[in-house]
Length: 343
Image 1 (cartoon, rainbow, N blue to C red):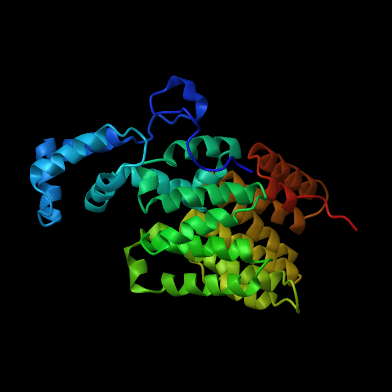
Image 2 (tube, rainbow, N blue to C red):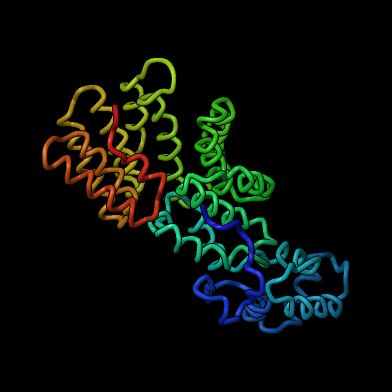
């Protein structure tokens, strides 16, 4: 399980003693103010815009003094002026893109070894980012690492839920999908409710603001989380045909992540229906799509399917390759799914 989020004591931005967990691209308040000045030319212009946006509740000179004090806050909480600046300007777009990438399960962040993921996340879980609603992405990144290490992520999910109302739709769907997955065995009714809310949000007008690739990947994950229990129910009979119909709803020409999910899901469904030839074909298509995307985790999952759909040396080699990937990724959850069957 990764260390709890938060800054290590004594590790300030620019402190060489902070070791390998220091990301040179992490943001301080000084960096943030400098970015605003670069956009608008002068600190006075930044202050004027902020005063205008706030209806001149404070005069321009007071705002400028507040921003000068904020610049000296390092990576401490920005207080009132930090909140005002973030509400007015938001985070820089490149910072927003970076932390979104770390919080999305369908990004290649999940293809990094868990220890490297932790080192990348830690510098961003401090102000100004942690003073922003966009911190939900950092928390989701920690949740993903926790799930990979089979840890307790309930506290992280609670923190993320507090930010959900102010988060962008993609983050809301991400959180609901992760909640549904995490609660699947401990609270099936809450898991089903979260999954239903994710589906409704994906179909809502708000979802149209998402990047098309993100929406397609989130949709594929939603389908997968609906179909998986049909192939492998915890109670009652399976319905492999219904699972296959769900997986067929994923666009076969969509993003590579979504195509991997489609092929893998169809492969397992066909295998359970007794069509090993079709299952092998889907497995090989999934392996190829994962390779084209450069995704080790998806490749390991596809190799597991290939091992199940084939016999002899082909099966043994596929499973051995999948287990090697799980080891290299330091992914305990994936390794557990690839254990030899007993009994």
